[in-house]
Length: 295
Image (cartoon, rainbow, N blue to C red; front, top):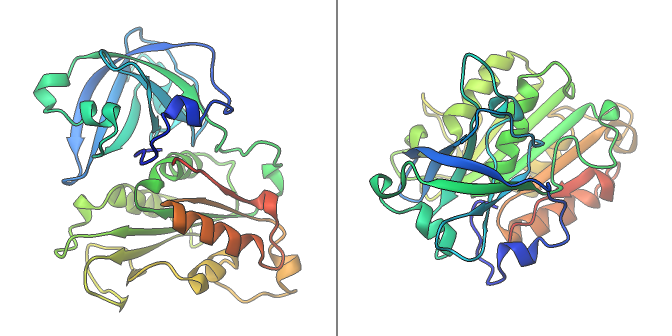
């Protein structure tokens, strides 16, 4: 929900989604531009208190002078929004440039909007843990992100890496556009992903990166990119490898995939095609292939 390309306002499109009853006053405290199209925002609560949410949820974001709220996915973790004596709690959003009025306002020059008070409300059902799913039975989690669709998955992945209660395997598959110089600092969340994988220090926690816009195809060797970086889009074979944990089935897919869950978030066509493909694979089911549709 980082960018809204639909003409239907966010509040109308998500009217059936669960929302918290409480509105929270926050201050836009920090802006960092990742590249020419995406910037990260940090929002501090006006009152030093915890704002509760689940990884993967979004914010109704009410901006002065704009009649309808924007919807933007939280990319930080619940722990980072927890009040403590040592560090102030905060919420992080990744905002892509678009014609959407709230996004346009949040892309104004930093000096014009830093310090502005906003009002937010937590909502959404694309979360970890997923509703109606017993996560104790999940031993392999596959996160598939396309472009700014990484936003809810970034929150989920960050949260899981920092907790001992996580699936035995987590495989992150990330496809996005890159500039020709392959600067990892200008690829949304890539440095953070690489740091989290390194911190996990676990061969069952993996990251595969697929880059378009570089002119490269196949394996890309680059000292500052993940070891498993490839030119081109995520293909069906890449999804199959991920849901099998990059190993051969021992007892067959019906058995070996019974503890596998896939979360998908990306552009509309990509999301629809990948969800449909994954749901029809042997051993997978409708309730274990979940997606966030932010259009």
